[in-house]
Length: 326
Image 1: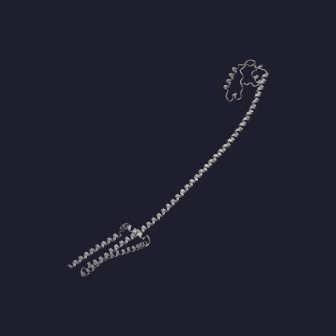
Image 2: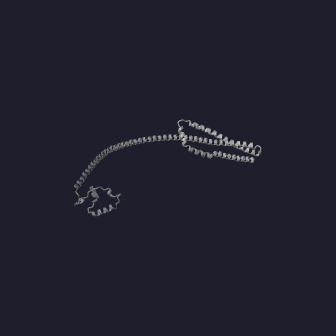
Image 3: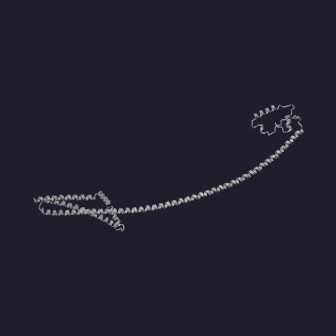
């Protein structure tokens, strides 16, 4: 609907009669409302200034010089618009240059700030690393101290274990010595018992000799029987003596070891005191050991049996003597 040139005006207003603008505008509005936005003429329309509210002369009789003046004004305005556009472009370029300068300045400032932050972070990291190294040194010193303490404890433990082993060895030697002493004491008791039995046998032999003299003419069978019983008793006594000799040989070997232990030097008096203090304990253990083996009880039971046999023979001899006297 814009009329920029005279030809446009002549094309529109070529008829001499009047046009109802209200209908034209209403029709144009309906067409604009129905037109889709993709092909709407608004896309191709330029901004325009509306006409003034005043009376106009007929277009067909419009004076030529007025239209020329209007055209010149429009051309001048267009030239001014171009000049203003060029100035606007220059201003935009200047603004862009200023913005680039500001951006570069800001980038430099930001870079410097970033470098300062990095330097501060590096300094902080170095301080933390130094603190960590000092802490590690302290921990290393503490660990070395603990290792030395552990080594000292192990040395003390090993020394105590060696001393304990030495004490146990000395105690075992003392126990063996006390055991040998106990065996020797038992052997002496058995020897005393055997000496008593020998005396009894001698007395019995003397009595038998007297009995043989008195009863040389009586009951030869009875005499031979008693002689055989006495000889069997003597043979049993001899076997017991042999066994005692074997025990003496074993005890003599153990006594030799105990003598070697007694001649060690400075610890002799201390071992004797320990021997006296623990003699009762070792004696009880030895009695239990002898009770388990049964050797002592066996000897005692045999001695008792021999004594009973001797008493029986003595009674029979007395009985025979009494019968012979009668």
